[in-house]
Amino acid sequence: MLRIINGETVRSLYSIEDAIPAMERAMVSFSDGSAYQHPRITVEPPGADGERGMVLLMPAAASGSLGLKLLSMFPRAAEKGLASVQGLIILVDAVHGEPLAVIDGVSVTEIRTAAVTALATDELARPDAVNLGLIGAGVQARGHLRALAGLRPWKSVRLFSRSRDRAEDLARWAAGEGIDGVEVAASPTEALGDADVICTVTSACSPVLADSDVAAGGVHVNAIGAFGPRCRELPPELVARARIFVDSRQSALAEAGDLMLPLADGVITEDAIAGELGELLAGAPGRLGDELTVFESLGLPIQDTLACDAIYRRAVEAGAGVEIDFP
Image 1 (cartoon, rainbow, N blue to C red):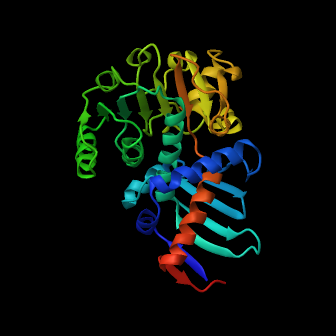
Image 2: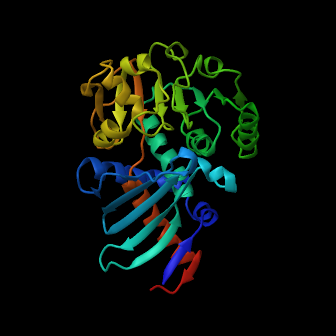
């Protein structure tokens, strides 16, 4: 039997708090080489009127779990009222090869990405960090507010979005979730002026803040949103003065415009990458003092695979999802 698990069911079974220990295992196993992960496969079919979409295929396996993530990003999805990013994850029994489940990939991505950011922030932010700034007001901003809310006793939480309506909607949602004190800022400068921790969670392809918006010392930045070698959220001047950590060196050097563009321009060298998050979680040094730190997050399929393994097990126990005969 094949179990179909939609996004609503995923969220009812699996929280960010559930995901944090699983993501720690995923990151450590990736960095120590005990997990298998194939480089991301990108398919770019030609689109109508010259517009192109993109499909990403991402296989991974660890500890008896095997998954294949398929993610689509198509600009014209909005014409049908669809999200620009859609996807699913196929979970396979790594012992017998039996397809076990098809699981909504968007909800899993939201949960595991925010959980990984929480881990990076716990490792790299100063212990006395109390001011949080967010740029972006979409699905990932919501997940990150939830993930970071309990991490520190935030004195202030300020967010900015190019759409003030979306920012205000997010602030109201946060209040309804018991995340108090979220303020909507009129500009990135206002949102980030006194921020100790910053999250950029946008779909932008050009910098969403200025280097001068970020204080000189001790700030931690989570760069989450930009994807692809031509897109970036961070200005090169900020990247040049940062101690940089990544989820995967290989992926960052092939897919992270935040790093690839400054590398191409000679602003930084590959040595600017101080380490992987999995190495930090295994005991490698992270923050050394009052330097600026950046965590560049691209997401790893091993994160999805381990999350889906737990979701599937919980769905079986709860009788959740829809079972179909297969094959």
